[in-house]
Amino acid sequence: MRVSLFVTCYNDTLFPETGRAVVSLLERLGVEVEFLSRQTCCGQMHANTGFRGEAFSQAKRLVRLYQDAETVVIPSSSCVAMIRDQYPGLMEELGNEEQRKQFAALLPRVYELTEFLVEKLGVEDVGAYFPHRVTYHASCHALRGLHAGDRPVRLLKKVRGLELAPLENLDRCCGFGGTFSVKNGEVSSAMLAVKLLDVLETGAEFCTALDNSCLMHLSGAMHRQYAGMRTIHIAQILASTQEQPAEVSP
Image (cartoon, rainbow, N blue to C red; front, side):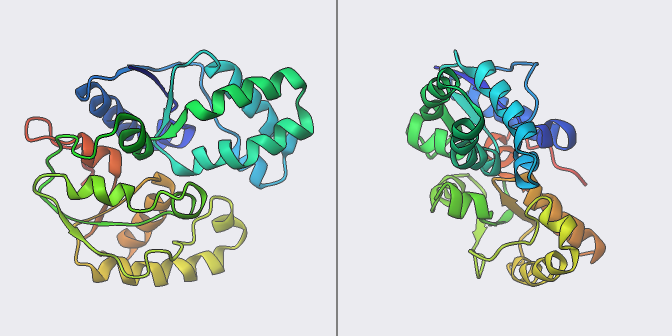
């Protein structure tokens, strides 16, 4: 099987180790990975702030770039949710019939990483090794947008050496929400403070999620409080082996 990795602009700019982990993981599972260097952004931040034309421009580009891809894998539930939830409206409002047809043909081939592993490849044990106590934060887009359910947890439970610490109030938002945290800073900070209490209560060494955006938000609060817990994208845990341990920031 051949997949095209849409790494997301967020990961490409701030968390390149996540993209490397996805490639390492998929290749270990026998999947051929291609990376199209002309990829940019899904347009989510533009759409969420009312810049419909700019968001449509990014949507058009993404659909055109991946129209011949066998499968597109994305290590971000928020970007996949953008494609599934907002692209149809953008195409209907600003696109033409040909663009709508191209998008409709591409959409069933777009997968979030854990969705691809469990639903497309049919695997839960990916041969990972990560000897740490870990808690899982369900980001809003994963939980409510993609309805990921317990899929990430099932994958984590198969990781050798990993102790999974249950997180209370799993459905509680961390307060990031992209531009929400900028436009509504006080509300966002209050939500983050409450979420962090639950996360720290687990006593985990690491907090993981499907989205580095949420993890960055949580990591900032942990750092400011000298909490001693670190964050790590689920792709890095699943890519980790005894021979090649995960890239973990200090």
